[in-house]
Length: 214
Image (cartoon, rainbow, N blue to C red; front, top):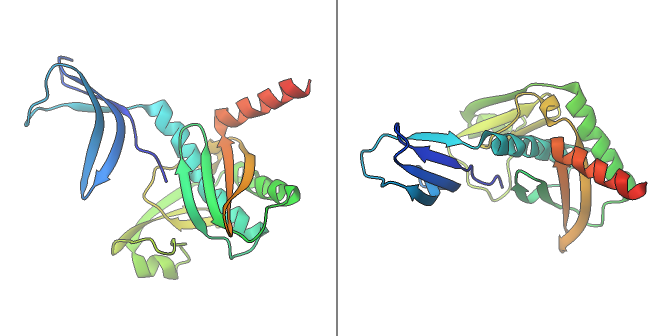
């Protein structure tokens, strides 16, 4: 569910500039989608790719928080909770999961507290490449119906969350700063959706609500 990076492709003398709006996997290649705004690109050109670092950092916070949210929901609601969809964007995260009824306000508060407690624990995010069977045997959570290669990437956030994932993540859980759930709703029979914000976005959300309350 992580959206692609954006940024700029330029040559050494800045005669060529390609503004990248999105990146997508096409087979084993990385496709850069955007607009050529200066010069001309030719096969064989040497260019420098510069990622929009601030945007990617915001995405990283939301992606790692999604893993913590998934683990927290399984602790609060039960192990029947399984990911059914996800969006990881710079401004928010959206997580769809299997559950048979609306999540109560008390359950949402408990979930949020668990995630923030893990953020304060500031455990390192550790990644490891291993074969699929060994990863699952070690407790890594795989998504039902997802196709995985023989070798997979395992992301571990302490003992709290272990999942197969190829996305970008924080260095430590504390980098997320703050996690706030902003909505919970139903999207299909037996599927619920939570939207949340992290880091600076979470602080902005708190500020807006305090201003309204005052």
